[in-house]
Amino acid sequence: MKEERAKLVKADVRMRGFRQRTEVPEVLAWVDRNAARLAEEAVPIDAAAGRVLAVAVVATIDVPGFDRAAMDGFALRGSDTEGGSDYNPIVLPVAGEVLAGQRFAGHAAPGLAIRIMTGAPVPAGLDAVLPAEFATEENGRIEISKPVAPGQHVARVGEDVASGAQVLAAGRRLRAQDVGLVASLGQTQVSVVRRPRVRILVTGDEVVPPGEAKDAYQVYDANSYMLRGLVARDGGVREQALRIADDPAAIRAALAAPGADVILVSGGSSVGSEDHAPRLVAELGELPIHGVAMRPSSPAGVGRIGAALVFLLPGNPVSCLCAYDFFAGRALRLMSGLPAGWPHRTRSLRVARKIVSAVGRVDYCRVRVMGDEVEPIALSGASILSSTTRADGFVIVPAESEGYAPGSEVVVHYYE
Image 1: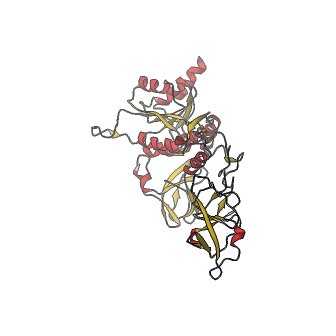
Image 2 (image 1 turned 90 degrees about the vertical axis):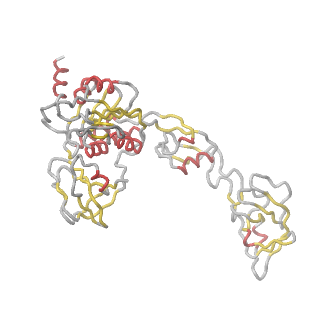
Image 3 (image 1 turned 180 degrees about the horizontal axis):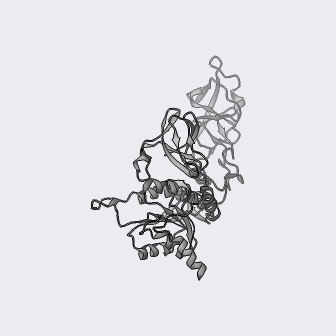
């Protein structure tokens, strides 16, 4: 009991401040240890785009399953066209026609041509397709002005996919064309990693939903809408999004309710008298990290309630974005089978104007790109959400650095 009381007292930092802050690499290590990939589930292919394969896709048929025409034209034997030219055309009789999805019922003997459409099966005994533009058809015959080699313009059995071949590896995030390939194999479902269910809790008496009336000292909820988009980007699915007043009982109930793999708490995570979330997380589960050596987002925290990971995100919008991107987003990507690293496009650029930081903390600096150079934006406060829309991206300044002098090369992570 004494140890338990000590744990709760340590978690209750209201009006006391942080005695020390955890280094960012230590927080990332905790996330990596605790954010395990979720189990697999089968989904129909019409819901598979964007999902991560849990099991490799193996072809059970050849694609194509027959030799088929790759062009509209005439099926024939390539050797029958040797020597054909504008000055010495080869003449062959046309002995019939075959369309896509049909089978040629006649006899395709050497020295004959069969009119054929793209995708139609090449009649047995013929081995090439002469494109229509290289033949002149008249009175049941064609004149061939350009020879074709055996096998030309014919898609052979298994040329696209051979039966038994692995066509998509486990861990791949399925693109539209990947789903199309699965469909071409006749498969109706795939095994994918289950998406983490995410509960978003926005706390604060001052927070009002957009569209509702507010008084002069209240603010509209921006964070829950920002978090919804970020969760979807990182492979999660929103379980529910709640706005909760600064009521410990209501916050406790929302934290303790079952059904979520990850709980994001925006607001109430710092050291104010109404910042209840850290103490409640510690009471209901564990809060091994609260307070991080970074700017913004120093009041961030990570913990667990039962099997659910909990991320305390500051209420200031930029801090919320920063803490999510560093820690919660990484956890969601790991749980959904995606690569853990930053999902942003990056580019190395030179610094045009000094980027200032302080040794001992990681800095998340919003920047503007100008050609091959980058500069910090003028306003960078944690509550200035518009700074992230005016910025092209951000630069991460490591804890051991005082920033970057003009002319230094930095890696820019683009907002997209």
